[in-house]
Image 1 (cartoon, helix red, strand yellow):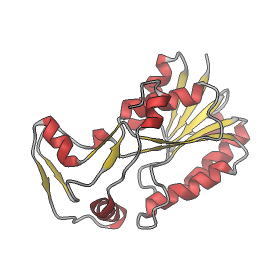
Image 2 (image 1 turned 45 degrees about the vertical axis):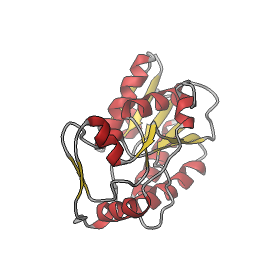
Image 3 (image 1 turned 90 degrees about the vertical axis):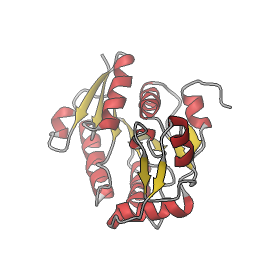
Length: 223
C-alpha cells in the first residue's frame, strides 16, 4: 500500500486529508511535532505539509520539514498554504508566502494548496458573533472538500508545479447565518497580535477566493 506522510497531521486538516486518502486505499502517516521525521518518513512516496496554526516562524518550520523530506528521499511535497498569502497586514500570511518560496526552491516535486477560511470555523448551530463586517465577502472552503482535493493532488498525476486556490463557495457571514436560521452580530475586535490583525483585515477587505479550481479538482461542473 502507498504511504503518504502528513506532517502536522494531528489536527482537523490532517484528519480530513487522512480520511480522504483512506478512501483511496492509501496509508496516511499522521505526524506531530514530537515525531522523529527521519524514522517516520521511511517508505513514504509523498508528504502533505501543514504548519501549526499561526506559527510564529512558519518558514523555519517548513525549512526543517523540507530538509527532513530530502534526507529521507521523499520525492514529493504538497504544502498547505492559505488564500492570498502575500498580505503585508497579516504576518502569518506573509510567513506562508515566504514558505511557498522555500517549497518552490526545495528541489522536491511540489504542489501548493491555498484554501480560503474554513466554513467549519463558524458554528452555525447558534447565533454568530464575529469581530468584523458581516457583509465582507469570503471564499469559504469546506474542510472535507479540502481533504479530498489534497488526496487527489497527492495520488493523481498532473499537479506538479501547480498552485491552487481553494474555495467551496463565496458568501458573507450574514448570508451564512440567514441560511442557517441564526442571527449574526458584529462585536468589537478585542483580539491582539496576529489574530487581531487578521480580523482587522477581514473587516476592511474580507478574503475573496474563487470556486472553480476546487470544482475542477473534485470533477464537479464549475458554475
